[in-house]
Length: 321
Length: 296
Picture (tube, rainbow over the protein chains, first blue to last red):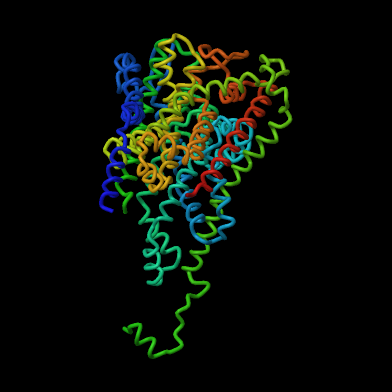
């Protein structure tokens, strides 16, 4: 008995072969390859930031920072470049988009997480809303030009004739305007707010809701005073991500905002955004103008990076609550 | 001042039910109605868009759409065959960069670097990268590839779209690897397989449907982007399969044809939009169904 065990042990010792060197080289090599690729993804972000900044550097030096962001003329003939109207347009359209998308997004997220209607109706609705993200922005732009703008024009004309004494609604109301872009952007970013807010609301521990209901709060008191405050970090970060998307949206902006370089107080006047400026001017731009456009791109990139990094930090900070 | 107990004791038929017409109930009904209206508010434009694109695009669509060149301004015969070929070529270049890098990076994140500082920062970088506007990806590829080569090209368009695709491919692949149960890996390692063998023969094949989904989702997203291509692949009115020359793509063609005042070009833009929208929606739906069913 004892000898047979010894026999098999000795047998076993011989049967376990050392890994061949090719195998371990493959193993090590594969590890380093995946590591390198992972680092490449992070490095790509840094590379984009450095590359954009260094390409725009001559323009940054030539036009200065304050002059560039405070001037209102974009004149390739005299090489005077200022993007204040574009910064204004970018911020205003994003603000309009958020103004519409935040209440609508949170409301819809509540509609889709509460049991107002049966699951059988809610699931396809949620699915359809998520599909909006997949719709290419040129297609939305095309639809905007030929369907939405003609549809909105009478409403804008009405706004203009009744509230025209307010500078915000003065102007010509031809349809291509900051307000049009803001409305379309709101449709494009609302799915982002809905999907993250839904996820956050669904993850809130049921005890919170039960506790609130047990104290006699109605469903809506519970939602507004317990659920939404508890999910605030998720909602805020979804709003930041949505804002990031709205700031950088290019095709829809170039197709619907009217591409006017004038700074106008009226939301019904055509305007432009940083992205629409780059997209619409790049084709005919000479050397200096390309540099100025790259500079504008750097400013857009910085705005988008700040917003997205904040969103990411908020998500990570409160993820474990 | 009476406590609840006293009031219950003194009047046994105290009514705890809230009146139907109480302000709280009315508020609840109002708010519930409002959320329903908001939901409709989002769905109506979505359906209107799909309906309009189908209505306007279908008349012009046919077999000739895929075989003919776009007409010069003023003429009406023709379609967008070259743009379909161009889109496929640019997407192929993008996938050639984004898929290997994205999948290998995801393998590192889930198989080697779990919980490590590197993984933390790579994920952070990828998430921020997702938020970088597509137009910046285009300008980046312009400065890196177009300026270096001295001309606009299909290749530079592919590079720009690869930047758009990469974080999507990586994060979705990572999710796919995450649902492969730990026991499967342990079993493989226990019978003596190396880490490489375990990953290449067990884990990746098990996660293959999700990896395929990751790639198609990335392609679907990249296929619809016009902004990065304006500065890289540009456009081309003729047939071209040359990687190092400008090339036509569907999104750029839709953009250029929608902003010129020619009826025939606008009709072609609608037809191209229908093809693009149909493709992207079908891919998204299939990807959703595949990942929803995937459970171990």
